[in-house]
Image 1: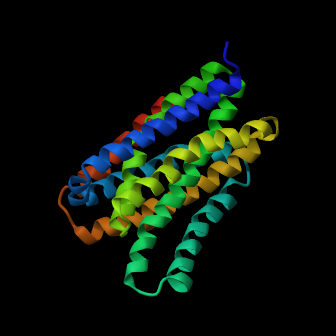
Image 2: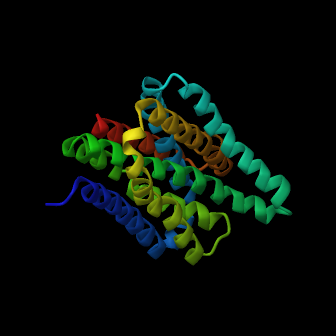
Image 3: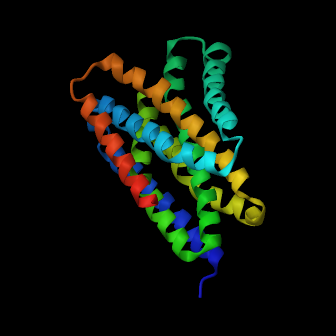
Length: 243
């Protein structure tokens, strides 16, 4: 019989595989994805902001009284990274475009890593708890890979590099979170997990609200609001499945 660790690792690898499939599928239809980039961006904003406010933030605050502080830290950390890229690294508009893809990739990557940590914690409690948590989180792995790839493509990376970087940011980080956190699982108390969740939520809110939505507003496509609403609805489904 498989040990609890290996079942947890398999769950993390399945999440990685589903994200990778999303990257592969959108890579095969990259031209179509580029033409409809504004809708994917709007959809991603709806998912990231809604999941953060309706699920991750309330849960983190239940776990740690310091969650609001680390929520702020998570938000401003990505802002400062963005400013650092533009002020100290960028020397022209092309670099600014690169930051458009790099910042969301960092935020999504950190969030995916925390997903792996959550797998470790829930499976250590029981197989049922881990299975339910995995089912809920796997729902958002496929679109997560798609969105990460498209944002990197739009920011100027080649399709080959975008696939590779999206794989590293959105796919590999989940099983990495499992393998890194498992040896310390007994030390990951609720307050610590609450802090990690609030950091993740702060990063995702920054990506969705101040990084992606302004790009949607520049395009002014008439169906972008429907894409945003679809993202919110998917977030509701994810939250209910976590229930």
